[in-house]
Image (cartoon, rainbow, N blue to C red; front, top):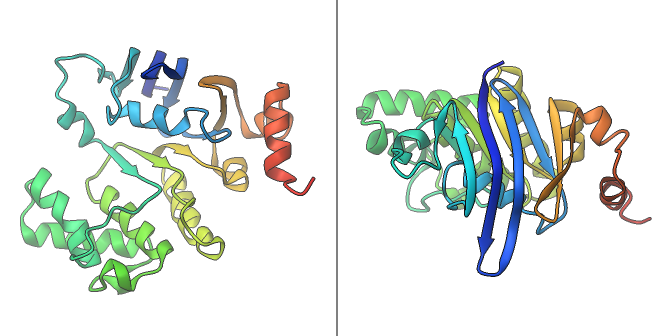
Length: 247
């Protein structure tokens, strides 16, 4: 299997605070890897280092063989192959759903208006909000806005998708619609690195689950092992808190 993402000895400091302490991680092409762990463990920072939204302090990151941590890399070129979906939807409030999905295609990929519109409509349909093309973000539920954000990322024809807790800002009843879209992408073979606290999704969809705590990878393996039969006390304690919050 070719590696879509290769991370070696990744460190990230914010001042005196060392958030990542030597991460080694690979994501194979077509794999879904879910990263779980407590708040402050470095999960989102790890994700943001993959496309240099955060500049690593030390270590190397390769995306499809291209070293993004090389000072001479054309990071804009690399980013065109990476879709990213954030906790917040980051839609332009003055644009319709359709316009939100068209704009990056036109500006970054230089697609003509007609082609961008066709691709936008296809992807809005794909994520189940095709009927909302002319709605503005304020007229959409949080779950619908997040699905528009996913459509926007998919419209760029990425080779891989990064998801940074895409359901954490949603009301509980809206989470399922977004996870269903992600599940469908996984079934279609999209390479995905997903920071999530949705254990059911990680258990059902991930090829591998990575548990992070304190800026290091504590455990990495199939969901049945990491979630079902964790080897480390830190993993067991975290899962007990998440799966049995009243206990």
